[in-house]
Image 1 (tube, rainbow, N blue to C red):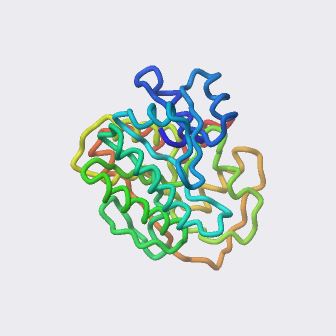
Image 2 (cartoon, rainbow, N blue to C red; image 1 turned 135 degrees about the horizontal axis):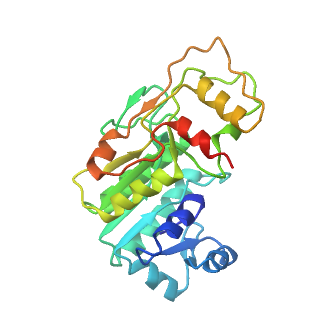
Length: 271
């Protein structure tokens, strides 16, 4: 797994007893910390070229399944070009290796603000920079791993120590009070990613989003109150509709069962 961040590290923790998993961190210290937990973590720098020891490169490129889980860079002068070069570096290495299946973790941010109803077969038209970068990467990996790539687009990722009640707490004049929330709990993204990585499906595009979509005002108000925080105050004049992302075709295709198909169920797990 290229990218043992908040999602990737937990994915490795949960599957290390089932599969032999090697994952990457951008620093040697980060890799050592995960190794202390019993996770096979190695140091790989993509800045933007591939930089790793020969033994690490051999280990990563010998995997049958490669999960790519790196977000577009922030604060980089030319983020599209930087991410494109990272993608090219990964592709060169994996294509020279043994990967039979590549799973690329993208985002529902590939859909634009005016795309109000989206499912796995909707053609993305991103309106933000990060969405355009990710869509370019989706297309790049799909072209260079023809027939061997699956793309997973998670919604807003949350979980135990990323509790949604903190996202908007105390903010005022928040836009989009009627917009549907498109959230996915980390537990459910792990379940879908595992199903996609282990299975063989005709479908190549998958979404990871809870089935229910309460509006932002209702959900984030209750989420903030569940933590004892000041709820956000939404702009009452904003009656815009917002995006509704469906993941039902993905769940049907893979058989992945979501624990948190109702985002309000996430509020019961306050830590």
